[in-house]
Length: 575
Image (cartoon, rainbow, N blue to C red; front, side, top):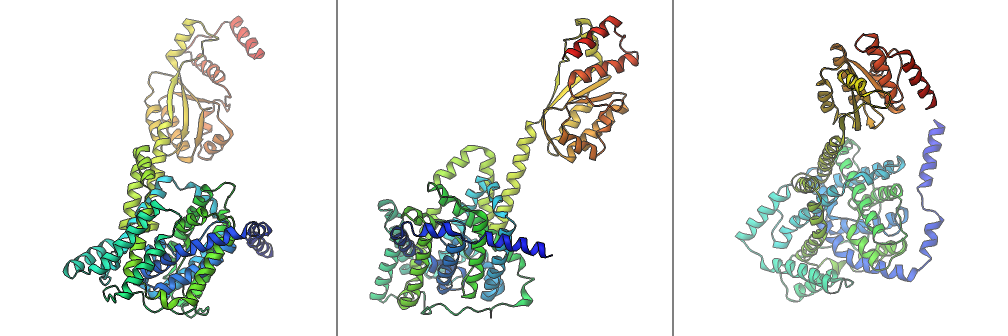
């Protein structure tokens, strides 16, 4: 027991930040401070908007950006990652809020954090590389659609209709707007989104989101536009850490939502860290440490009233583009937002909800990479199918189910493609040691097949059908040196085929069986069936000689003269 505890402790210590990260912070602090300030300006309206969208309010979004952003920056596995509330996480949280309330969301976040730390201890970060690109692209497209649809009620200035299905809620909001239109709110949302989208093309480095929100707030306040509903009062500071929200009796019912939140946090954070690596030279994140940092961030955020957090792709990209080189930039981003919480809460509370909806609408639009989608759709029909199914599942179901569906479909199509690579071809017998007449006689009674590629569950039954259709022969030789992989299903199917041939009086010999194949064949009882007189054959010529000897013994072939047998034996000795 003590050994296990010491190993776990050693693993946890290995996940903590080391001296190298501290040295990186000191390399170019001025550049990192400027990058962090820029990211904070971009992150402010997003944090407010995602907090409102989650159902816990703008203050929850700010608390998450500050607390989770700081903790993940210190303990995460990427020097450039920026963490906080995200649209993808908001999509998952909305139904949890509807079913379990705000305290349920906080409890789920805490539980998800513990699960992420456990995943880090189990070194689960490496498995991120196995998620296919079409699943990621479809996932991102679906998230963008859901985020955009979630903003429709605030963008139209109508109360959010009841329901937890985004398509239903959006339709009801449109019906409400048609009955009683709020053109002021609609105008603010469209104007802010347009400024962000056009401005990003004109001057990508300028934070048009905060400029547009400030302008909308000034116009709403100066013109006393009652139709532009503001965020509302915000606390002037972070609440003291507390576990009062935790209901131990509800932990069992909240486990499934916690698993979903943890899975999404892991997926989005590792995706974001990978994007950051791709945008730089010389940066490489540690996936297990990233899970560890996100786990601690999600444990800490609920204590201050924050929602579950992940690595944020958009904010991380801004961080990289503005020259960040170390964790100091992410820490600066969290510190600036904390100053805003303490010093500017009354001003922030006056921001119109419609303006924040415009920010998130523009964010959703910018998440869609049209070029990547076109490339993926043109690659193969399988890739296009996976992308579309994942996107539709994200929109109609939820994000975790969408990823699972995408992975299952991708796995099924990949297995189908691999199974098609398996080949079962008849090959000519070696003429080297036989005359033309003898070769023709052998060919009448012996047939050799070469198996190329994998012999596993997806391809095995086609092999069974082809092999058992062999007719008018006495011996079948299976050349197995080119079998790339074999599973228990493939071995069982091979055993079944050999038994059916034996019942027809056909001897089956195998050559070139590899060590790994031998273990699988032996485990299902197929290896003994491929042996003749308790012997195996390393090469196909060995198997052919054994087949000829069998046919000679059975009287099917005439025995070779003594001098011919001596010649063949001497030639074999020289090989």
